[in-house]
Length: 247
Image 1 (cartoon, rainbow, N blue to C red):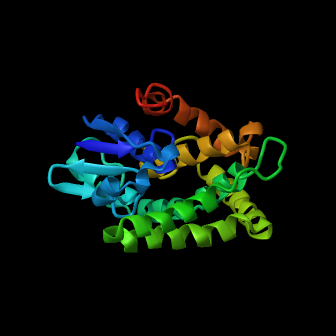
Image 2: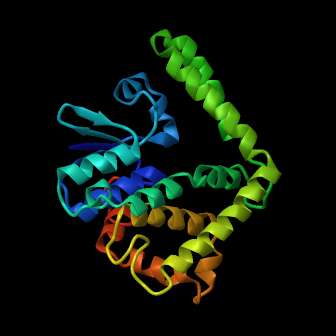
């Protein structure tokens, strides 16, 4: 198997955690999203959505992260997702997938160190997609879809009321998750699952952003001890610290 990914991307980390938890062998292929590698026509041939990660396993190429996780459950190692045939786990995964972490991330990334606005990185993506649509007409529809996505997303990011409301809702959701794990264990029960892999990437991102990290500062919060359990697992070190492709 080949995993085309950027080590610090949100969903790349999720799938890397799953691969490490399952101890499945794979070859990593570095995709430098800092240099807009997902806009490259050759990458779009592999992944028409132009996102990371992409999993190539023999004749199969998968680019939706939940479908990748489903495929890995059929491949080997402990069942972490659909292999458990657990409707409550599937519902929890759907909840976590819908969390707007990308919105929270960009709402911080477009700020400077003192809170002032920095270069408009989303405007650059919109312009690049429009330019590439002209340069590579065979992929015009794909680039136009990326342009339209980033145009709509940019409006969300620069809407402070929308961002603030989303943060308030996420604050409450994190408190609910904390209650799930207040007595120990993991989100879907006593065994580690895909939900925990997603939560690891999510909570790490919040700590990194310095946003939505109230649970980190409160030792009585259920997520405080839960996160310590996640960080102490071997797959965490393999993905967040020891990955040889981390730039």
